Image: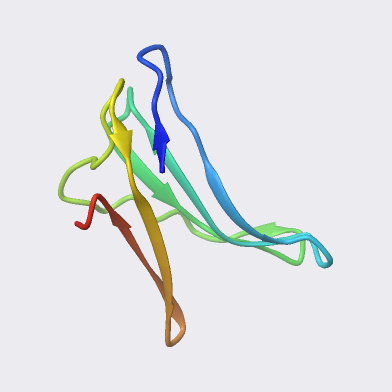
Length: 82
């Protein structure tokens, strides 16, 4: 859970393997762009950004609950149970 400051432009949550330095899943809401960017950083290289989303589930000044579940070969990201 977290609360987003009214002054925020963006924030990020990274699922990172500290031994290898890989980031399996960065979740990066960008408020000015209205985008929720997801990606990966494996063996020193960034993967393709995923930005397709119906709406940005985060709001400035509001508290949120973020849940990340690993499914077979992908992650499911839920914000406030959506």
